[in-house]
Length: 417
Length: 88
Ligand SMILES: Cc1cc2nc3c(=O)[nH]c(=O)nc-3n(C[C@H](O)[C@H](O)[C@H](O)COP(=O)(O)OP(=O)(O)OC[C@H]3O[C@@H](n4cnc5c(N)ncnc54)[C@H](O)[C@@H]3O)c2cc1C
Image (cartoon, rainbow over all chains, first blue to last red; front, side, top):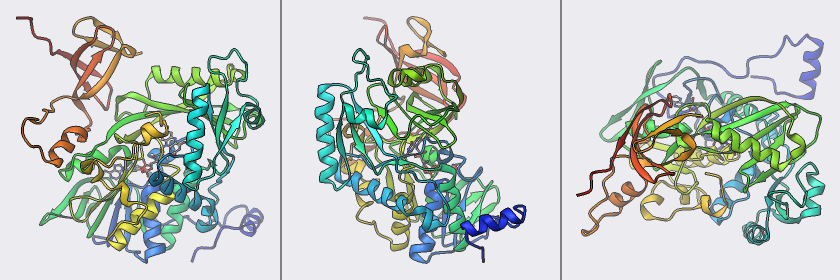
């Protein structure tokens, strides 16, 4: 039995020169047979395994990760967590996630550093404010906290923004979600991994799935560089690489993979204690606890499997940052990187079974699935264990693209992709 | 900045181009009844494969629509294939 992390354990290890910390999870040899195999050791895969074990008592589970845990988009994102979506279906989904995040550090006994510092979505014109009011009302009707702020209120939260009347995009106000915020991305992956491992889940890194195994039309296993593993339920949570796995099952997904970039500046003294997003400029930023500004924007407009970005988007995002907060114009960028994101036509995720019995999907989160990790894992675990959708995941079934019942958040909440 | 070849204008800055779709899809015959699956596949299905892929692009400056053969993993451009035919 592993000892829980606590203030006492930190103190004790301080006295013992930090020599008593055990490994956070095992690195077992894969067994040949499991009840559930999850492909992808990002947040969604690890959370699915955790909730399978914790909520449904399904512990004979393997998570297969081709690289290292969180090395996909989970460890590459800008860590914004919010539930400011437009449609009731999305509000239910993302608000479940924010609610789970609120208790996650305690639930996992792992500090995921969820900081509810609020998110400002800026409105730059009178029509923007009208749309902002509509959006705020929709969120409130869906039971999600939202407030429409005027300029002085925005200034109170984020005084470094550009309040100059001659700004190209003057600030008329903002949609404010106070419960939104940021968390430590690696900690979310590691916390779920450690907690799932403690419940008996096998987490196997450096294990790449190359083929799916079928018998009588069912998906019954996977071929990997560590051998063939079998299970009656196989779930793929591989974000930007979902189409490649689905193609092996003969499925064409409504997904296009693009690169999404992020940037971190040199560390600065605390100057920004909330998250600000300007839809007009296509840029958002926050400040990490280490002091670096964490900067993001829209996807590169070129289908890509390259985990790096292109220059035109860098120019757009960084010049957008300077328009948003001219005070930052001489701050240096330290690092830039990209992840391969899985974009759907309606900017909503795909959760649930597929037409191939035994093969499940959790994907299509595109540029916004970090915030949804607890919910994505919770709902997919329910789908697999109960052999039926949870009411919250039902609208996000893959069949919506055939029935035409899309949940078009791309249009409704102005997601920049 | 990467440069893409337009069959009409030659090499131009990538910002002048717009990605439209994967090449090779055929619109179902809309004079006949079309089942939902066929239509959904046509509207939304994508191979989304890695490596070298033929894609439909537009050069925004001259409005030329053409096929760009491109490697989605290395981002290298192989060639542009014109779709224009001569006027009859
Ligand atoms: C730059 C950037 C900024 C972002 N900002 C935000 C944000 O602020 N807020 C937000 O909510 N979301 C954000 N996102 C999106 C978010 O990061 C993703 O939606 C989320 O992390 C997806 O998690 P996942 O577990 O589904 O996928 P991933 O974390 O990508 O995990 C998938 C894993 O599958 C593995 N894998 C793939 N193929 C195989 C195979 N064949 N065999 C075995 N393993 C395989 C990969 O190695 C990877 O580790 C951002 C993304 C990027 C790239």
